[in-house]
Image (tube, rainbow, N blue to C red; front, side):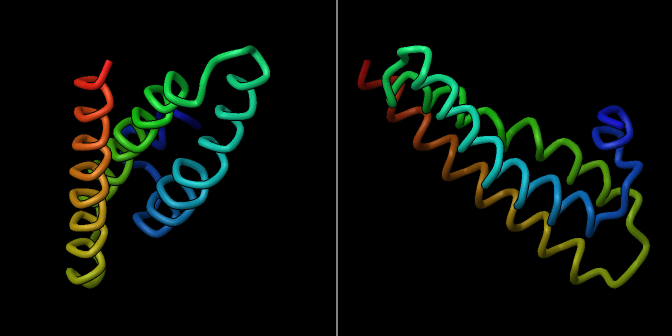
Amino acid sequence: MIMKYFTGGYSLAKTFWIGQILIANLLLPFLIALILSNLGFSLNSSKLFLYLIPFISAIGVLNSSKNYSGKKIWKILALVFVFIQLSIYGYRGFIMISNF
């Protein structure tokens, strides 16, 4: 199931909306922050883990977009969203690491 996601085996719609938006942007960050805060980690140190999730999840979207054969606009919009999101997270992660 996980390998199918990372290799682009699921449709672009499922990979983008379920994998990237629902799981990587809503559920996993909340659960990881909850678990790390209960383990005694500060919010700043847990952000480092949280910034990695969209990068990992973007692999599935990128590979799924390679296999997508529908309207080209959906492929382009998904890739643009992932690019903008990764740029923002990369910038925030860089700023956070440089402030340590």
